[in-house]
Image 1: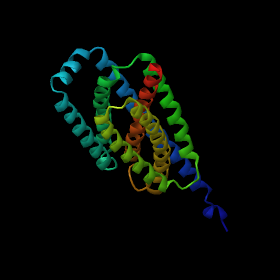
Image 2: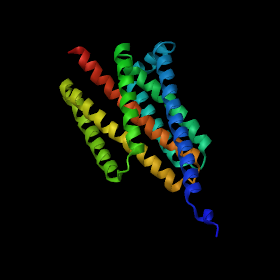
Image 3: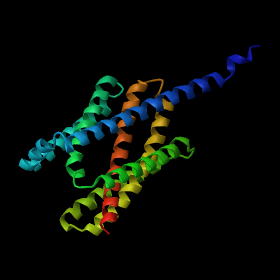
Length: 238
């Protein structure tokens, strides 16, 4: 009898190879999106600074609404068509990174290079650590995602309220809470995308799934960065 026919080892090896390829692609897309946003921010704060400032100063609310609506539309388009049309979703991801970079540049122009550099490296260290934990952990994190999203909604509501209170102290505290939430989401999203590939990787486009995961991880990293910017800026003022 040929016992090798029932040996699960080849299938396990193929699964692990496919998983590594998927993760490399997903984190590669995410890193590229961050790089595109960084370039977009840099150009908006230097080469196109006058045009960007004029655009936002003339019609600030209109431009903000346009940016928010367009970004939500692109997020929906990426998630909806990721596995159906990976190429189109990847293009939308890069376009989203450009637009988000332009929008961030208006706020980031208020901070020093030291604050931005420190925040970027802090966000990278936290994101990388939490992503590794999420990929290597054997624990069931399904319930954790629900709690994190509930906490995120609560934080957003509290931040809206604080827009009227204008409390710098409360805003500073919220920055630490935001870091904790998005650190958790970085871990959860990494774990969730790994599990999704293992469950559906042979049924859908792995490239499309990687684009979808890259978007979520990109948002986790960028929000970590923005909250660290507020923390570092607050610390430098003290």
